[in-house]
Length: 143
View (cartoon, helix red, strand yellow):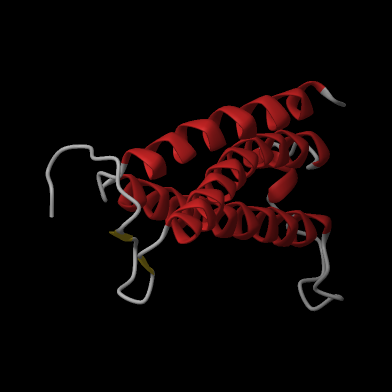
Protein backbone atom coordinates (compact mmCIF):
# COMPACT_ATOMS: atom_id res chain seq x y z
CA UNK A 1 0.00 0.00 0.00
CA UNK A 2 1.32 3.40 -0.99
CA UNK A 3 1.87 5.87 1.82
CA UNK A 4 1.36 8.87 -0.45
CA UNK A 5 -1.59 10.04 -2.51
CA UNK A 6 -1.91 8.37 -5.89
CA UNK A 7 -4.29 8.74 -8.84
CA UNK A 8 -5.51 5.21 -9.46
CA UNK A 9 -8.70 3.41 -10.34
CA UNK A 10 -7.76 0.51 -8.05
CA UNK A 11 -8.26 0.57 -4.31
CA UNK A 12 -9.56 -1.36 -1.33
CA UNK A 13 -11.91 0.77 0.75
CA UNK A 14 -12.99 0.11 4.34
CA UNK A 15 -13.75 -3.60 3.89
CA UNK A 16 -12.08 -6.42 2.03
CA UNK A 17 -15.14 -6.90 -0.19
CA UNK A 18 -15.04 -3.26 -1.35
CA UNK A 19 -12.35 -3.70 -3.98
CA UNK A 20 -12.29 -1.25 -6.86
CA UNK A 21 -10.74 -2.40 -10.15
CA UNK A 22 -12.21 -0.13 -12.81
CA UNK A 23 -12.90 3.55 -13.53
CA UNK A 24 -16.64 2.90 -13.19
CA UNK A 25 -16.12 1.26 -9.82
CA UNK A 26 -13.97 4.17 -8.71
CA UNK A 27 -16.63 6.68 -9.81
CA UNK A 28 -19.29 4.79 -7.83
CA UNK A 29 -16.97 4.56 -4.82
CA UNK A 30 -16.27 8.29 -4.96
CA UNK A 31 -20.02 8.90 -5.10
CA UNK A 32 -20.63 6.67 -2.05
CA UNK A 33 -17.85 8.36 -0.07
CA UNK A 34 -19.12 11.78 -1.15
CA UNK A 35 -22.60 10.88 0.13
CA UNK A 36 -21.11 9.62 3.41
CA UNK A 37 -19.35 12.96 3.84
CA UNK A 38 -22.58 14.85 3.09
CA UNK A 39 -24.40 12.66 5.62
CA UNK A 40 -21.71 13.31 8.22
CA UNK A 41 -22.07 17.07 7.82
CA UNK A 42 -25.86 16.80 7.92
CA UNK A 43 -25.76 14.77 11.12
CA UNK A 44 -23.31 17.21 12.69
CA UNK A 45 -25.57 20.19 12.01
CA UNK A 46 -28.70 18.20 12.85
CA UNK A 47 -27.25 17.15 16.19
CA UNK A 48 -26.56 20.76 17.13
CA UNK A 49 -30.07 21.79 16.13
CA UNK A 50 -31.61 18.85 18.01
CA UNK A 51 -29.70 19.73 21.16
CA UNK A 52 -30.84 23.36 20.90
CA UNK A 53 -34.49 22.33 20.45
CA UNK A 54 -34.25 19.82 23.29
CA UNK A 55 -32.89 22.41 25.69
CA UNK A 56 -35.55 24.90 24.57
CA UNK A 57 -38.44 22.49 25.07
CA UNK A 58 -37.45 21.00 28.40
CA UNK A 59 -38.86 22.96 31.30
CA UNK A 60 -36.29 24.72 33.42
CA UNK A 61 -36.35 23.01 36.77
CA UNK A 62 -34.64 24.13 39.88
CA UNK A 63 -33.44 21.79 42.56
CA UNK A 64 -36.39 22.89 44.73
CA UNK A 65 -38.88 21.66 42.13
CA UNK A 66 -37.25 18.24 41.98
CA UNK A 67 -37.42 17.68 45.77
CA UNK A 68 -40.83 16.28 46.76
CA UNK A 69 -42.70 17.94 49.60
CA UNK A 70 -42.51 15.96 52.86
CA UNK A 71 -46.28 15.93 53.34
CA UNK A 72 -46.99 14.41 49.90
CA UNK A 73 -48.19 10.83 49.74
CA UNK A 74 -45.28 8.77 48.37
CA UNK A 75 -47.62 5.91 47.41
CA UNK A 76 -49.44 8.06 44.86
CA UNK A 77 -49.60 7.55 41.13
CA UNK A 78 -45.81 7.70 40.82
CA UNK A 79 -46.06 10.10 37.90
CA UNK A 80 -44.91 13.35 39.42
CA UNK A 81 -43.83 16.22 37.21
CA UNK A 82 -40.25 15.69 38.39
CA UNK A 83 -40.31 12.03 37.28
CA UNK A 84 -41.83 13.02 33.94
CA UNK A 85 -39.15 15.66 33.43
CA UNK A 86 -36.39 13.21 34.34
CA UNK A 87 -37.79 10.63 31.91
CA UNK A 88 -38.02 13.21 29.13
CA UNK A 89 -34.47 14.37 29.85
CA UNK A 90 -33.21 10.76 29.85
CA UNK A 91 -34.92 9.99 26.53
CA UNK A 92 -33.57 13.16 24.93
CA UNK A 93 -30.09 12.48 26.27
CA UNK A 94 -30.25 8.87 25.05
CA UNK A 95 -31.32 10.07 21.59
CA UNK A 96 -28.48 12.60 21.50
CA UNK A 97 -26.01 9.89 22.48
CA UNK A 98 -27.28 7.59 19.75
CA UNK A 99 -26.97 10.31 17.12
CA UNK A 100 -23.44 11.03 18.38
CA UNK A 101 -22.42 7.38 18.01
CA UNK A 102 -23.76 7.33 14.45
CA UNK A 103 -21.83 10.53 13.68
CA UNK A 104 -18.59 9.07 15.08
CA UNK A 105 -18.95 5.81 13.13
CA UNK A 106 -19.57 7.65 9.85
CA UNK A 107 -16.67 9.99 10.62
CA UNK A 108 -14.31 7.07 11.12
CA UNK A 109 -15.53 5.44 7.90
CA UNK A 110 -14.80 8.66 6.01
CA UNK A 111 -11.38 8.97 7.66
CA UNK A 112 -10.46 5.38 6.83
CA UNK A 113 -11.57 5.88 3.23
CA UNK A 114 -9.19 8.85 2.96
CA UNK A 115 -6.45 6.69 4.44
CA UNK A 116 -6.57 4.56 1.29
CA UNK A 117 -4.41 7.42 -0.07
CA UNK A 118 -6.42 7.47 -3.27
CA UNK A 119 -6.66 11.03 -4.59
CA UNK A 120 -10.09 10.48 -6.14
CA UNK A 121 -11.51 9.25 -2.83
CA UNK A 122 -9.88 12.17 -1.01
CA UNK A 123 -11.41 14.67 -3.46
CA UNK A 124 -14.79 12.97 -3.03
CA UNK A 125 -14.59 13.42 0.74
CA UNK A 126 -13.55 17.07 0.44
CA UNK A 127 -16.31 17.81 -2.06
CA UNK A 128 -18.85 15.89 0.03
CA UNK A 129 -17.91 17.82 3.15
CA UNK A 130 -18.21 21.12 1.30
CA UNK A 131 -21.58 20.21 -0.24
CA UNK A 132 -22.87 18.81 3.05
CA UNK A 133 -21.91 21.92 4.96
CA UNK A 134 -23.36 24.15 2.24
CA UNK A 135 -26.68 22.27 2.35
CA UNK A 136 -26.92 21.74 6.11
CA UNK A 137 -25.64 25.03 7.55
CA UNK A 138 -28.72 27.10 6.59
CA UNK A 139 -30.83 24.68 8.64
CA UNK A 140 -29.22 26.01 11.81
CA UNK A 141 -30.73 29.46 11.21
CA UNK A 142 -34.26 28.14 10.67
CA UNK A 143 -36.45 28.42 13.74
